[in-house]
Structure formats: structure tokens, C-alpha cells
Length: 190
Image (cartoon, rainbow, N blue to C red; front, top):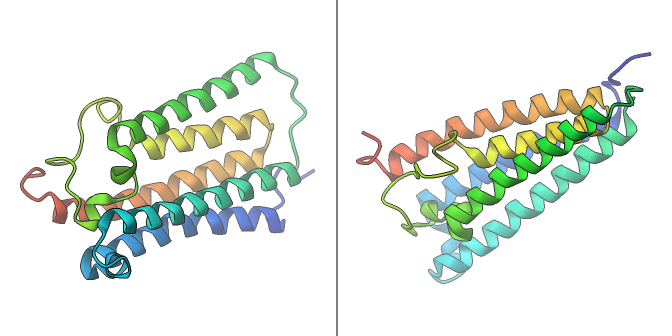
């Protein structure tokens, strides 16, 4: 028995949406930063533009999450009955979501959805307080931990593989965002 069916459409869809989400939001955010194109649609109302952008990101993440769960349901599962694995899975999900929620709390909705790219200055520079003091990009790593928890809970080798893909896609997004942070906050990052 193969542990991962690489030709399974659900797996390929999950990989596509996982890569597409950060790629699209990075391209759109950079487009806004350089052209103010989204803000112009809202006659310069930056917060309304951020709200639209946030809705786009939120929707992309919902689709990505649905595709991930569909993939782990349709792929082969390991036959492991382990209470300890269940506890570890739920712990990863809860810790991951804690980091995501703590990040949103610190950044606020506007900060979470790239308000700085829209010209809304909420901070003097990148945050260094909790949860950002624990790790760089806690929202991305919290999300990755959540995906890993669901993969383990579903006893899904494909889910573990997809979690690795999530991490790779997030690392690419972080590299692109770091470049933009150098442009947006040049003095703070020197």
C-alpha cells in the first residue's frame, strides 16, 4: 500500500491552493503598495481597501483549509490507535491556533491584512513583543503547527507531506515579505 497517492486530485488541489494563497496575497499587496490600485477603487479609503483585501485573504485561506482537509480524508491513513498521538495532535492544533490568534490580536485586523502595504502605519516597525518575541512570523508557524496537528489527528502521511508543503510556501512568503519590510520600515530594520 502506498502511503501517499500523489496522483490523487484532492492532494494536487491542496498543493495548488496552498501555494496559490500566499503567492496571490503577496502579489496583490505589492501591487497595492506600488500603485495604490485597490485604494483607488475605494476613492482613497485605505481601511475599506484593507477590508476587501482581508476578505480575499480570508476566503483564500478557507479554500486552502477545505482542500487540505479533503486531501487528508481521501488519502490513505495509518492504522494507529494512540491516545497519546490524539493528545499531541490536539495540543499542536491548540498551540498553533493560539499563536495565530495572538498574532491577530497584536497586529489588529488592519495589521494582519497588510495595512502597512496600504499606507496605514500602525507601528514604528515590525513587532517584537509576544508572540513575535517567541518566533518570527508566529502566524505562519502557528498555522503550520495547526495543519500538522490535523495531519497527525487524521493519521495521514499525505497530511504530513502537505504540512511540509505549507511550511515551504510560508517560507517563500516570508522571504518576499521581508524584502518589503525593508522598504516599508527601512530605518527600524537597520
